[in-house]
Length: 239
Image (tube, rainbow, N blue to C red; front, top):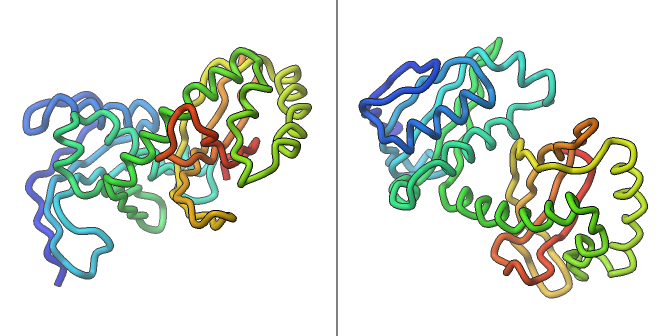
């Protein structure tokens, strides 16, 4: 039997307060603002060896948003990861250490989809997003050469990175200047390169543009420094 104990439940359709902290409240509000619908939340403890991750968790059950999500995504994997990140990112540093994982349950026709995200992975995503920020600044300024110098030579040669510049220029001309990057989900991944195995994060989302937004994905090494060549790939897609 799974050793799970729920400590409390609430149904939410907007901002809330009471048996939750201000930062937890903000995290749920962020999810609701992004996807709409309703949220039931729970705090609990998992001690079962059947679970992938164990310890204290925070669970969000999202309903009334599946139809909207399915218009843009083939599965709920990326939206679930984004829900977890939105909630985690709003927490205080102490709260981030207090939880072992965030559980996301998206209710849909025919059943629900449950996903669990270890907070240590969510912390890596935060690091990855901090690295993406200057890369997005490059794209916003049209500094494509500077953007491409962030490409790691283990992933592709400098010449191969430069071959993508015409595409960046052409897309910018067609769809307008970049204004921001909106994360839509993430995936942690490993890549075996010449110097060994690298722990990478795939950040899938949208480049918000002056004309028409474009799907875009960054692949970065979250443990790298901002001054290093931390970019391991990118594509005009979020799947």
